[in-house]
Length: 182
Image 1 (cartoon, one colour):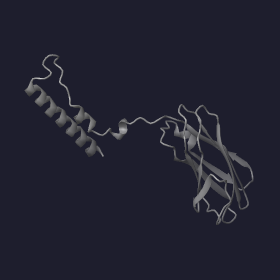
Image 2: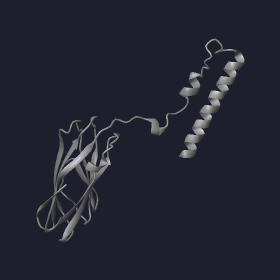
Image 3: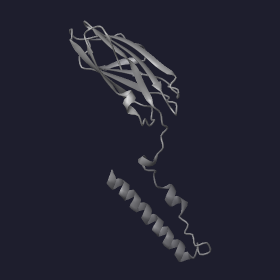
């Protein structure tokens, strides 16, 4: 990746140098002292990925987890504290214990493997207004004494989130039936 950027920079410098030499040789630019660079030389260069500007948003998840017997409940609220709106995003829920077979889930959620559920949040307005809410009642394999639930953003809709701490959680839920908040 570094070699590619360096190579692009060297091509750009070579093109600019060639344009400068040809301009000076033909006498253009003498009146102002400026050395014009051909538009074609600049337009042909791709914009480096690190220079592209993505809208900034602050996606967050809050809720609670409860484990009882073979059942695991996850209640989740997704929000966006802005400054830009998020058109779409996906929250990922990963479990330390496998889910049993096919689960009944809200329409925006699907089970991607035995231990992972993905939920589409839909549009999230900036400003912390309440976003999408999910309530999942899942069945686990066996009767575990505890479950670890990891919550994070699987896809952020192309925004930059400079505060990822509020959309990454790890919750330990003992089999007490109590609500463990994140």
